Image 1 (cartoon, helix red, strand yellow):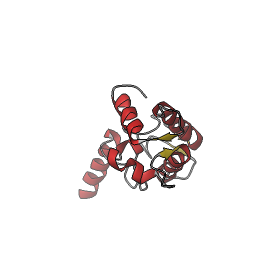
Image 2 (tube, helix red, strand yellow):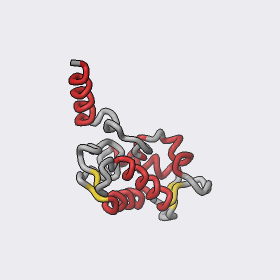
Image 3 (tube, helix red, strand yellow):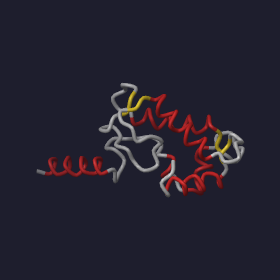
Amino acid sequence: MKPVFALAAATAAVLLGSVAPVGAKGPPPIGSIPLGEVIATLDRNGNGCIDLEEGRNYVSRRFHALDRNDDDSIDAVEAPPMAGETSESRPIALTDWQDAYHARFDAFDADRSGCLSLDEIKAGRSAADAGGR
C-alpha cells in the first residue's frame, strides 16, 4: 500500500508543479533563484552581471538535467511548466528553450548592454510577475 501512496503523491506533486519533477537534478529555474543570489550563481566571468552566454549555458544545463530520456526534448512528464521557466511549451527542443531564454534576456536588458544587472533582473521579474514576459 505504501508504494501506491508514494507514487500517487509524487504524480500529484509533479502534475501540480509544486515541486521539481521526480528524479530531476541540476540547476533550478533561473526565476526561482532568490534575487540576491542570481548574479553570484550565473556570473561565471566575475564581471558583476549576467551576459547572454552565461545565461544560455545555465538554461542549457537545466535542459539537459530535465531531459531524463535523452531524446533532446523536454515533455510535460519530464518537466511540467513551472513558474520561472523560459518557456511553457512542451515538448520543447533545446534550441527553442534557448531561444525563449534569449527573448527573456532581451526583454530584461533595458540598457542594451548585453549584460543583465541586478536592477534589470529585479525590474524584469517584476514585469513578468505583473503579466509581462
